[in-house]
Length: 339
Image 1 (spheres, rainbow, N blue to C red):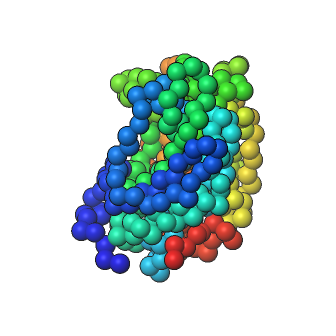
Image 2 (spheres, rainbow, N blue to C red; image 1 turned 180 degrees about the vertical axis):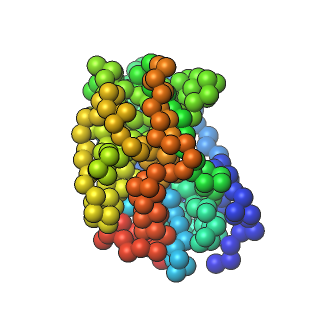
Image 3 (cartoon, rainbow, N blue to C red; image 1 turned 90 degrees about the vertical axis):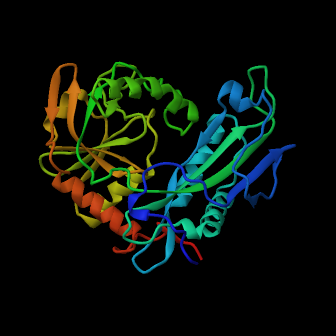
């Protein structure tokens, strides 16, 4: 298929409307078959559950053009399962995981002309999401829902390379113990907006959230998991029931152990330990790994190097992106080819 006439190398990380999106509706206790549609707009009642009580969740994943010219997606089955978990926690009807993966493939195939070419640095970003669509005035779950997936071509998250960022230890809590921090609910991200704007206004790129119970342990940022490297090259990620199980983070831990031969550990990470690590990164779908150069903890500065991505972090980044782009053989089941 002939590609769209887009300046792929100069794309930013922003929404561009594409031609097709998948839509399925839940009514009378069942999902319909769903279909690809051309209309990008949504019409709903003024009292829709999502507008009154934020009953919505979402996912994010990408499609790539590999080195040999195939169009692929990366581990969509994990996105499907994570959305199942989100729906259960928010009292929303589960969209079947197998149908989720098939819908992802349909949307990519229908918008194949928008999948950036290999080597452009750009990808096709996919946003599956679900929301309560029927009127709800009392505090309760909606009766009807809509599941949608749209696609948009995006450029690299960092223009000019991933330069180390500066983050601060936040005084604001991201999620409550036994709350919704472990699911991808829209309300979690709404909660973080004030704090990220405040961080930017004060010269920081992101916030480091701590556990709200003791405020002694590292959790995550508003939209990414942490990854730390010790002096003896061990890869450590925080363990908590209040953080989102990042697919990128889980994949990087496999890469570290199975491809790079590094020791990996998921455990509680204390703020007091931050000065003992030699590298730090944020991991997520958008950027894969964002290197952290400096953490500011109320006047104390912990520096990891502000010039480049650390050597172990760089190996992790290069290996995972190599797998995604087809330069390195992937573990079984990680890559789904769009036929």
